[in-house]
Length: 505
Length: 86
Image: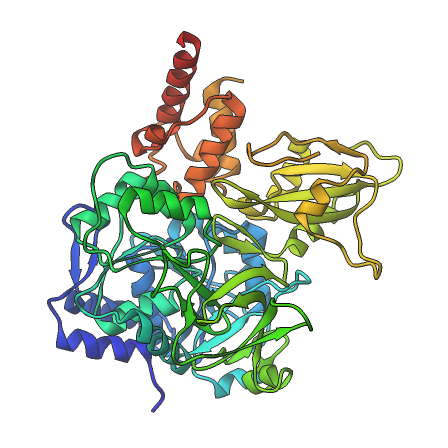
């Protein structure tokens, strides 16, 4: 019989039915392992009755709360897999997921069911007050190879060319990942973890780990620093799992409240700035634990041992993983190649199985990330060969924004790149070349054009008109912000500066 | 355009993407409805600083100031008054 992560949770729940699983977000709210298990079973029965079963793939379009976890586990109970559809995306982006990944039905927040109207084939059925099950017309066939895998998640990811590929993670793969991560984190029933991230992007080496190892999850009332801190203090949190933005909001607190029980303050999704690391340390006397996480392999490195002394490093590799840095002669920096447990099962479109992916690099996963490693094995990420932009931890490729901009009838070509800004970490900037004979549209018109099809965090904060785009000798776009923003090419800045730290021409 | 109108326009284009201007009133609880996540808080601070040329202090970033169109509006007005009197 195949492994099912819902069974792993049920086994844990049987050993500690009265142990709290979820605390908050309302004052005094507490769900035990036993209660949560019953909730999952009831929801699974509802789904079964509605015709959801083994081999189906269900889109999950719902806010990050207790119900999100219930739906995911209930879908696993009935043998279905889950494709998260992040609430933050623009409608067109959500619909694109349905076209690229074979989805049989959707669980959607009742407020936003309209997005999927063009695909719905029958009347919505009520799962609870806030959620509806929508049967949809499948837009494509699932790849035949999928049947041989025991998929838990089919995650949509955008590629560097703006085309999607999707990542398939089986129940077995996720279990391998959480066991590997726990060799460093040692999560157990005594842990109480403040959860701050979007569950559509973060679920496997976090929520699944907490439920499998018997920990308690704290859901704060809201994302304001004062509320995050209060949740951590009231529930004697031993861990916080968040993005730099959350820690920044917490450092705003000017009380003398401290976090004495905290074992780890995990930072994920984006690079941590030295200023923020220092500000958090000065305020709480705690060093933030930087991590290296990628969808293809999980969480292979965490700075557990020396977060203060080696700030900026994502730490040493966890014991289960192997690394190879591919360096050019005479250089310290190299591309990270990894191997170890929990490697993705496949890319969805075009289909590439794990073996095929690893074959390209003699059994290693090429991450596209650039790093240096010191003598003690501490890894510092120094760049991304994939040019991804991360706005407050929300990641995307510049190519998908360029594609949208180039659809504007007045724009001949676009180049999008990220610049470092104080609060958001990075902010996207667009360099645009105007079509001959056209008048440059203003910032509002460009914003409106992007807002129709892109999530708000992907919309450039500045649009600058340039005579031509910077390219390498071979014609590839240069997206190096330092070079681009110091260029003496003639530019017209149609956008006002969004952030005081930018120095656009 | 009044502060209220400008804020509503900003909200439906950013944190409340997916809602129509008619879909919520000025007392609609943005935090309770789940729209004010960390990204929305930071974006709203940036928006207010840019459009009203008023620096937001650390102590200002509390739920009471960001709860609804009305509370955001009251916050902007108080910051503007503060600036004039200083």
